Length: 182
Image (cartoon, rainbow, N blue to C red; front, side):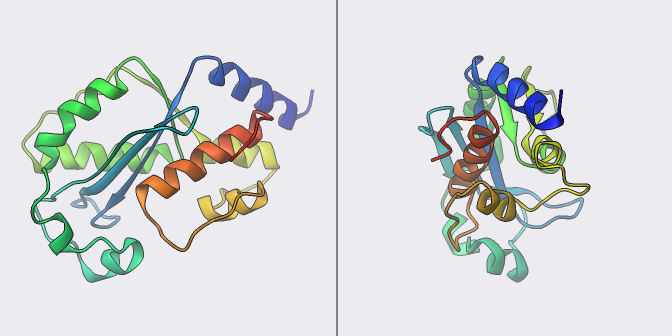
């Protein structure tokens, strides 16, 4: 059996379990970076949550330039401490597809730490769509989400925001499952 067919079968098995898809935007990439936006959609592409998050430290200009989320935009919104209970309930017991799971999981852990919370995984099954897609497409290295999405025939926007990226993540997964990616 070839890798592409194996990944398609695996994606179809996961799809039957009604997965959700998650993406975050952050203050950066380093060990002190925090989440400034989180989005979750279901397997039908319906938005379950899409919210800005007020970080404990300012958003640096290079991060603002990347995702367009400014310190002014997050000044009056809920903190991670306030948002997490809602997110935790949403994630508990679910299959969750993330494009680059290691990064988003690390950002959740760091946001917990910055807000004085003890990290306890939400009792979910995480699967990394970036790694699945690399195997599916026969790439020896991982592709950026925008590149994978274009290779799957998805239209990408210039905006690098959590909701748009969550829809792209879902679309890449649906493409691998042999379904309609849009």
